[in-house]
Image 1 (cartoon, rainbow over the protein chains, first blue to last red):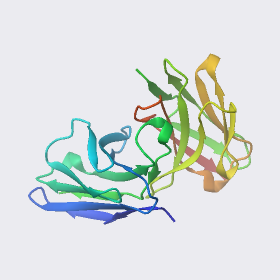
Image 2: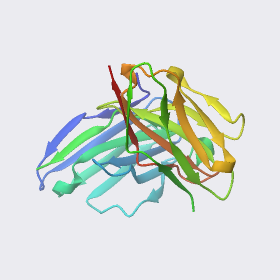
Image 3: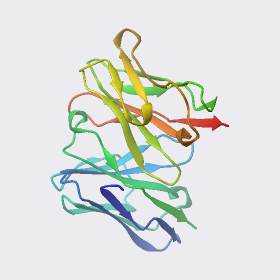
Amino acid sequence: ETGVTQTPRHLVMGMTNKKSLKCEQHLGHNAMYWYKQSAKKPLELMFVYNFKEQTENNSVPSRFSPECPNSSHLFLHLHTLQPEDSALYLCASSQATGVRNSPLHFGNGTRLTVT
Amino acid sequence: AQSVTQLDSHVSVSEGTPVLLRCNYSSSYSPSLFWYVQHPNKGLQLLLKYTSAATLVKGINGFEAEFKKSETSFHLTKPSAHMSDAAEYFCAGGNAGNMLTFGGGTRLMVKP
């Protein structure tokens, strides 16, 4: 049982759709992350929030828009995606940012397919 | 700059034989190092972590890893593989306030 819950588990969307991924953590952590995991590519850090403030945007295209209303919830809003955006999107949390405040706790991910 | 390199993208062992998954890091300072495991359709789960205490770190499910500064390595081992160990394993590391850097992953296959 993970302390980080992601919904939906699977999502199929067309390139003109707008959808959102949701992440919720029940661990009392202050930092939350979005990662993209594509086949045959290393794990890619997308966004980092620390105490609800965005601290990292790893050159992510604007068709991905994160939102962190509080330290327990994180969203990833998607619009006009491309087929190459199909991947497993992982949410994670930690006590705070920085390696010393790891480890990261991951959710089970949302498998996104863009058609 | 820091980086983490997993030397093998795939490792295949027979059930009951030892497991060795290799990880090397580059870092100017003493790093924190981690191993994570990912089973199919799941997120990453922490196996063990090194944060400058004992160099031999014991983790869950019988795994352990040894930090060797002279070799800049943090290899993951297990004396006897079980079928349930088949998964993808990620080494990760970093310094102080920096973000974690992940290796490319090693897929472990266990043959009956």
